[in-house]
Length: 86
Figure 1 (cartoon, rainbow, N blue to C red):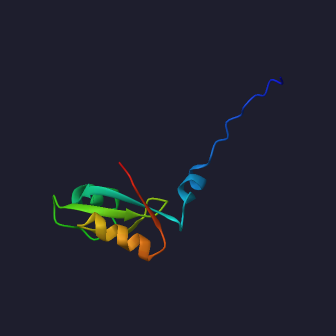
Figure 2 (spheres, one colour):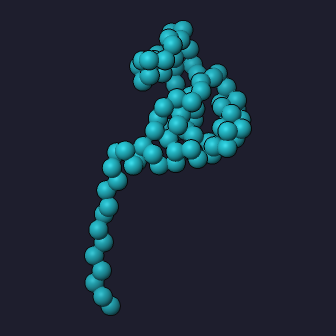
Figure 3 (cartoon, rainbow, N blue to C red):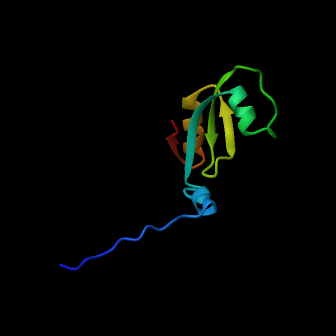
């Protein structure tokens, strides 16, 4: 039997951010405060509001809403595979 060494390949941060781009959308529960902290350029939302975010593979917001089901429907409508982020 041959001794095979395995090498770990490291993916660049840019390549990792592009993983699933245009195919996968991430669904995440967050408060409006967390959303505004993560995306300060987005219009401010009322404080303490619980919402759901549909995010692109690179983490950019696609749409936000108050219903996880609505975001899943939006993902399917745009031919994206929705996955949950915990």
